[in-house]
Amino acid sequence: MSAFEFTRRPRRLRQNPALRELVAETRLSAADFILPMFVADGIEEKREISSMPGVYQHTSDSLVQAVEEAAEAGIKCIDLFGVPLDSDKDAQGSVAWAEDGVLNRNLARLRKEFGDDIMIMADTCLDEFTDHGHCGVVTTDRHGNTIVDNDETVKLYQQMAVAQAEAGAHIVSPSGMMDGQIGAIRQALDAAGFQDVVIMAYSAKYASSFFGPFREAVGSSLQGDRRTYQQDPANVRESLLETQLDIDEGADFVMVKPAMPYLDVLAKVAEMSPVPVAAYQVSGEYAMIQAAGRNGWVDQDAVMMESLMSIKRAGADQILTYFAVDAAKALKG
Ligand code: PBG
Image (cartoon, rainbow, N blue to C red; front, side, top):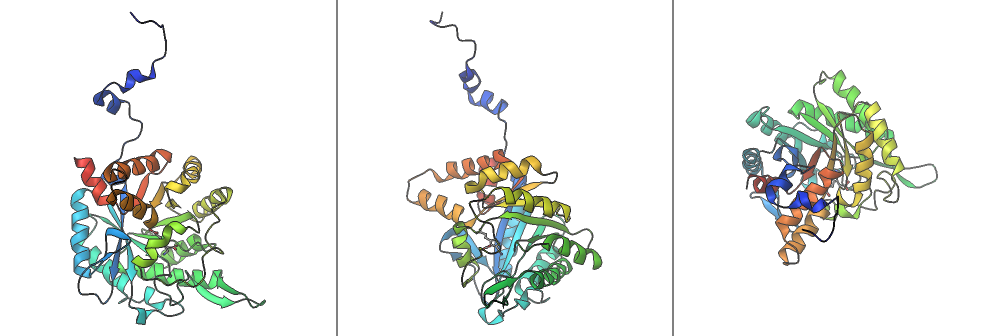
């Protein structure tokens, strides 16, 4: 006999692991994860990125090995970024569409090695390849201000996307936040006969300080900032506009980035999107969890899984995360 006659006792469903598992609303799976990877030109051995422990600038050979390991862990998609030699960078980022450029060369190799066993996604953006570090063509407007020229940049994205498709990318992922980029890239791909190449659009991408460690990862020395093309962290409405535009222009997936500091944005985008919604747990999010874990301040594995669970619960169908392989292994137990 109890002292009370409570009708509702929510604790009833939390009694034991089996019951909790039975009523779990959100489940993570290795198939949700997309692993971002870096391949660098001119290095003899893979190099660990100091602000991202466990993440490497790969050589071509170590990349193939790492993709194999990811595939074995159950990962279905990797996202490849190229790190060119400094001497190959120029104002336009022309090595981005060169057939023998570091990114295209390695996309081709991966497609040859893995066929359709794992989806090969390419980052379709110029900042890794330009000497000024901006995501597009830098010019001066009629008032003398330095600007990134939207439409000239979009033309270069078209070339880059076609080169990536030619190399064998299954998915291109335009991340430069230029207006009209998705429609223009879709047109260029179709005109070149690549109707089957998928576009994952970085739709809601913020001018975020959480990208810090990524700059080390790709050896980029950005002059200035990206606030005239990436979104203001103060805003959520324009994310819905950006997402709607990308869907209208033909995006097969849309994405929100960063993830954890923008779960409200993610939830709203997930509510309105008729196409799959991905979220990118970025370099700074990864670095913070690693740093706290290495200091013994949090339980790293537990925080890793909780962060991924939260991102999925908020509405992400796919999660780009540097933890992809670790998390996939943890799920296998
Ligand atoms: C642009 C791009 C960036 C990231 C992914 N694509 C950098 C930026 O926009 O400044 C950041 C990813 C991360 O921080 O993990 N090519």
